[in-house]
Image (cartoon, rainbow, N blue to C red; front, side, top):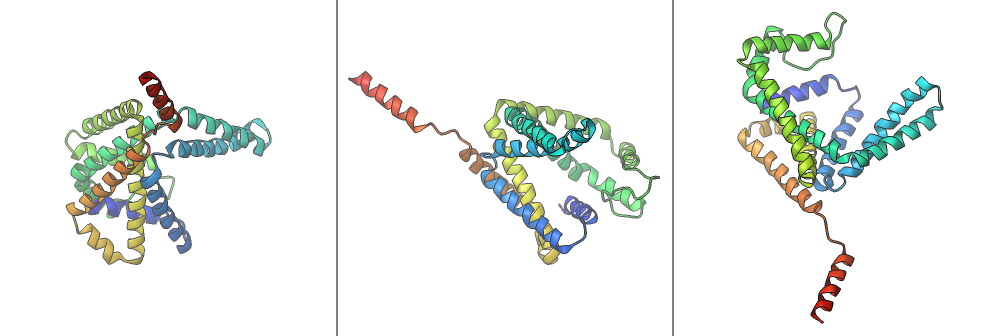
Length: 266
C-alpha cells in the first residue's frame, strides 16, 4: 500500500504550483467533490457529463474562433452548447467508455502493486532517484523517451510483461464498455462510488501528509485493514448510489393503475 500512495503523493507534490493557499484549496475541493460523488454522483452523472462537455466545447471554441476568425465569445458559446447537447445525448456511451477506462486503471493498478512495484523501485535505484512521474527538464529527455526507457526495462526484467499488460488493458476496457452499455444504472453507481472514493481519499491523504504526517503513517501501517476501510467506504457509496438512482414510478401512473383496477373490479 505504501508504494502507490507515496508515488502518487510525490508526483502531485512535484508538479503542484507554489502557494500553500492554493494547495489547501485543492485538497479541500477534492475531498468535498469526492463526498458529493459518493452521495449523489449516480443521480447527477448526466448533469456532470453535460457540464463537463460544455466546458470542453467552450474551451475548444476558443481555438476554433482563432482558426476561423470568428468572434471568440460567440464561438465559445456555440461550441459549449454543442458540447452540452452532446454530453446529454451521448451520456450512455461516454459513461461506458469511462467505466471501461476505470476498470483498466484499477486492474493495472493491482498489476502494479503485485508485479511492477519491485522492478520500478529497482529502476529508480539504478537511476539514483525514486520512481516519480516527472516532466522533462530539457529537450534531451522527453517524456516519450523516458516512457520508452521504462517500458523497455520492464519488458526485459518482468516475465511476459508486454503480453500481460496489453491483455489486462484490452480485456478490462472491453468488459467495462459492455457492462456500461448493458447496465447503465449499475455503471453510474460504480462510477460515482469509485470516482468519489478516489477524490476523497486522495484529498484526505494529501491533507494528512501536510498537517499530520504521523496520522498518515499510521493509516499506511494498517496494511490490509486499510484496504478493508477503503472497500467499506466504496461499498457503502455503491449501495447508496444504486438506491438513489433507482427509477421511481410517477405518482400519476400509480393512481391511473389504481383507477383501472377499481374499474375492473366494478
